[in-house]
Image (cartoon, rainbow, N blue to C red):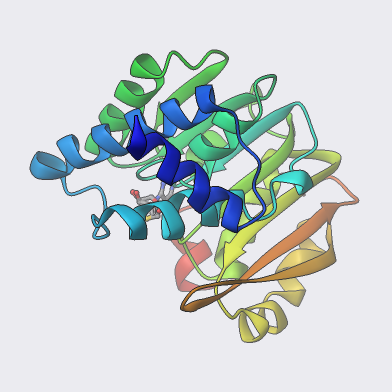
Amino acid sequence: MCYTFSMKNYFEKYNIKISNEKIEKFEKYYQLLMEYNQKFNITAITEREEVIEKHFIDSLLNVDNVDGKTLIDIGSGGGFPAIPIRIFKDDLSLVMVDSTGKKCEFLKAVVDNLKLTNVSVICGRAEDLAKDKNYREKFDMCSARAVARLNTLCEYCMPFVKKGGKFIAYKGNAQEEIDEAQNAIKILGGKLEKVDNFSLSDATRQIITIRKENNTPAIYPRGNGKERKKPL
Ligand code: SAH
């Protein structure tokens, strides 16, 4: 099938080596995205090459940095970066969280259709789930893309990460947000480890890694919208 070949070429242009079997999963994912988008409004990006670059490849830019066994993705929406990462990493156990019912319905359809194992979808707010002892400080990694400014996002995400684990934020040009989030990072038990820079054809991308050095104090996340209205 020539369409399969062209998606593979596209990945390889970004030095992402990928098997035909995994490319088939990305093809199915693209089809489901287009199908559900007609009724649910999952993504504004629909042109094939743009979806490949801005969603699939963007989610895989730093895939070697994803090195633990358990990942929780906050505000997964259409599944980015979580689903591309999970397609890539067969032995990764994944939880995706989103507060919008329709997004969760879509995510469950993707998991079923692509036959992804060890993946669950939770429909709810990160601030509530972070208080649940089965989820708090239970993950090697937490990821998030396009959910909130970094200071707010740290309060949503850091509580899920085990001591020694990391939070990975997928951003555009983020220097200002990084400066602004210094206080939140520290209070929540983190330390800025590195910022990796990438470029897509028309976008600068920065992936921020925050290492969890200390437990997050139990009062965080504060809830009632304080993470957003009064960021740390
Ligand atoms: N990560 C995806 C979606 C970004 S849109 C991507 O990069 O394409 C942001 C998503 O986060 C939306 O689907 C919204 O429902 C969800 N969201 C926003 N705040 C949230 C919260 N506090 N808890 C859980 N989900 C949240």
